[in-house]
Amino acid sequence: MNHYLDLHLLPDPEFSSAQLMSALFAKLHRALVAQPALHIGISLPQARAGQPPADQQPGTQPYLGQHLRLHGQADALAALMALPWLSGMRDHVNPGPIAPAPANAPHRLVRRVQADSNPERLRRRLCKRHTLSEEEARQRIPNRAARHLDLPYVQLRSQSTGQHFLLFIDQGDNLPEPRPGGFNRYGLSQGGSVPWF
Image (cartoon, rainbow, N blue to C red; front, top):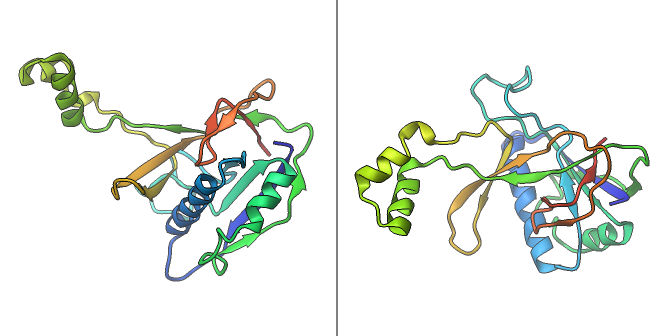
């Protein structure tokens, strides 16, 4: 993870930055699935959880930003950019050069967080797994048990089921030292950290 490449979204009157970021993320995912030897991590330097920035309306989704940073070895980043994965997005994205990451940058874990936001689904699952009655499941999982996340997310469509889902991203706190480890096909941590700058 000693190099990086920045992808900046360009303003578009027809699409919001959240829509464009979701489309860019989906294309990156497909490229990483097609090239499993590439070890690429991501970060969203402008993303903010919770309160949106001043230029967004209150009550809108947490802010993703307009900047996707790819982390990896220089050869892995070059191999990714040699693929046609950005086709259809070239008018919406300004890719920067591959450059060395700052040597003294802190590291963070950028990982997926899954929300258990549907108590009915959790109850059905509990009934099925533990042969409980509906009332027993309702007592164990009350409506207030739903977990709502206030994290930035991208909206994606599952290639296998066709269903839309939200992929919540937590960028963690600075770590005292880098963590070795892998990354999934979304570029999210499976133990590995990325430089944060």
